[in-house]
Length: 112
Image (cartoon, rainbow, N blue to C red; front, side):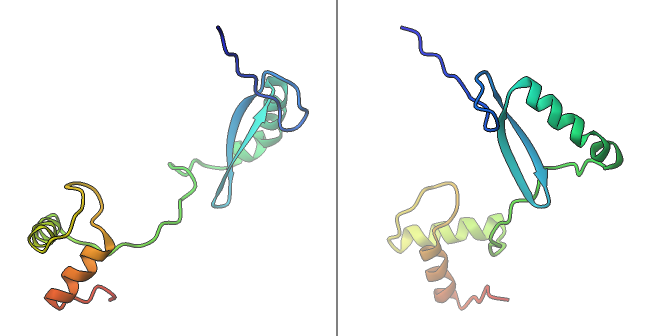
């Protein structure tokens, strides 16, 4: 049995479209276009692309600011958490509850 996926154009509904990605401001957009529609989009954007400059990266993703800790401090937090009965992964982000408990136990204020 063979399964075939058909992507239809978001503009015309025609089959055999592919996803095109473009950005404006701080937002990235995706649209499914046929080859002809994609060519039209590229033609419309050509003067802007020619006059513009590459930013070197995709539109920035707004991320929440996390308190900065050193590798040594993260190791200390994990060690303290294990000794105090907290369950968490050995790798990855330290759970907020553990970070808060550690900070309270050590008189650390990260709100600055």
